[in-house]
Length: 237
View 1 (tube, rainbow, N blue to C red):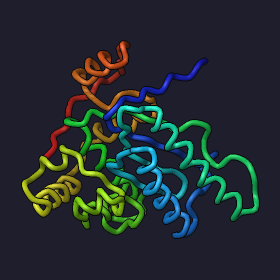
View 2 (cartoon, rainbow, N blue to C red; view 1 turned 60 degrees about the horizontal axis):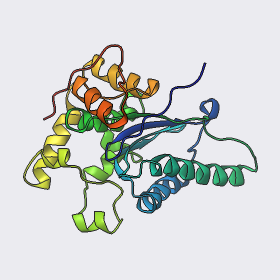
View 3 (cartoon, rainbow, N blue to C red; view 1 turned 120 degrees about the vertical axis):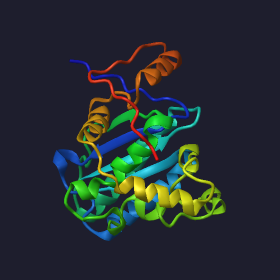
């Protein structure tokens, strides 16, 4: 059976999951996490990729990335990022061969209805995994950077990994208000169907969006992409 062709949309976020081969450990020490984050910080500038969320677990990563008009730069970003990690891992471990699953999974995300929900889903991974009881206690996700968000100058100069999207800006007039509302949003009880929808969307390579998003994507790529169990927009606060 031929595999589904990956859909990459210009100027849209994409929820990405990449796992270690046979779920092997990728990040064993703090230096491994730090090196991967440093590579993200460097490569996002090189390939003009925006980063809206991330979470590094021991054997897989979640990323929320947005390419510009040149969509080919997103898979190239992932290819170079994975290759750098593999080379360093093999050198340190004195081994050769693959480190990652052969193909990362991705799902285009509808900004207005699903962006913040996807950020929350990614940043709550350590809680669902039973590693910690609050995202602020997990060092290797975007939540820790988000709640200590820097100035726009830091973002422009590449000192920050996260980018600011209009959906996040719409949470309030000041950064303090936005962060307060986002913390409250992350602390809400999340319906199991929301978690399932976001999880299944990326695992199946489907769209993370509603019917209106399907129609918009059809206009962009000239083909209708439908899914079972169509989702409705979740409430953002």
